[in-house]
Length: 64
Image 1: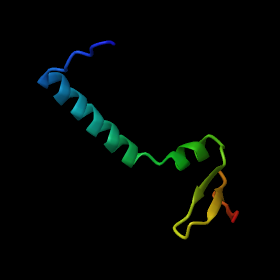
Image 2 (image 1 turned 180 degrees about the vertical axis):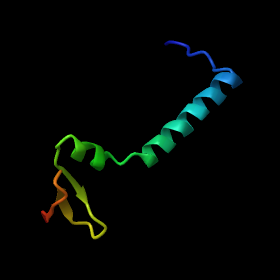
Image 3 (image 1 turned 90 degrees about the vertical axis):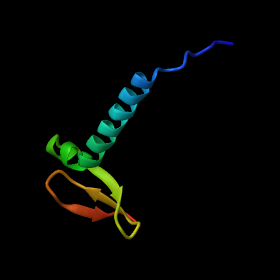
Image 4 (image 1 turned 120 degrees about the horizontal axis):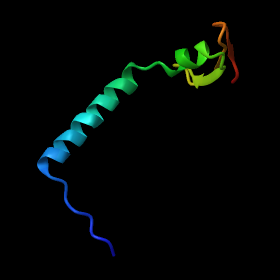
């Protein structure tokens, strides 16, 4: 059995700050727009729970 050393308060604070920064970055990033800019079609659920295909040209198709 291995023993994992406890993190210091400074390390814990640094990890917490990093986690918060990552969470903000995820919230602010629109992956669909990034992929569309690269020419990639994506699929996601809309607000009604339907599966929708989003094409890079901005067109959409409801799949279900």
